[in-house]
Image (cartoon, rainbow, N blue to C red):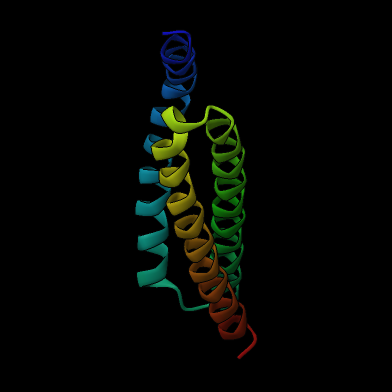
Length: 114
């Protein structure tokens, strides 16, 4: 019961920030899509390299948050095992997303140097 209450309190504290971040991310993604389609100058490509580099950093930060959550859940024993496994999968996903964004950043940085 205590564990459930703690989990609910954590969710209520974090949920508004997650929703706000998702809203900003959607807008940023739309703007980045427009820039990708119209990128011609080295400055455009440098801006995209910086944008995707920042997205990679954010994904690595998400992986760190999920790692801390995984550790917290793992201390709960059996009740937290499923959530710890969920966090473990998210860590792997976040790291893969970071690698993909890093590749995009490198590609645009190279394009800026042409």
